[in-house]
Length: 146
Image (cartoon, rainbow, N blue to C red; front, side):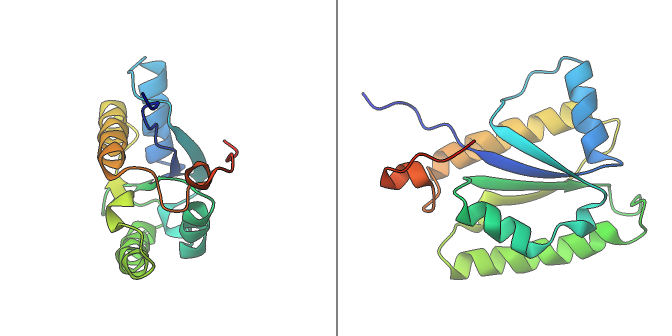
């Protein structure tokens, strides 16, 4: 019987809200899957589309981008810029054969540790339903680095 697929997720988390929310989930001992590797960014607006595309090219199964709620961005409109980029990226992903549901954008404040954990759990389950990324190195017999 084949081993159950465990998705690899890359998260880009805004320093001021989302990363603090993830930290709150940890210090509150809220359980969520460990399938995500986090990159802390100063603002969700600093997540460049090439970073997301490179992540998929490297074989991750999904990318989560989180930022401050609309109207609460520490850099005024960074999250609005991020929202436009993610909408654009979903179209690009579809064009290159990657299901756009593998990219998710969420707003998480520093006080929403429970919400962060719930989002990670939901994303892991959604990606499990989609299966491994077509670019995942294990799918072609090459071991990917974690």
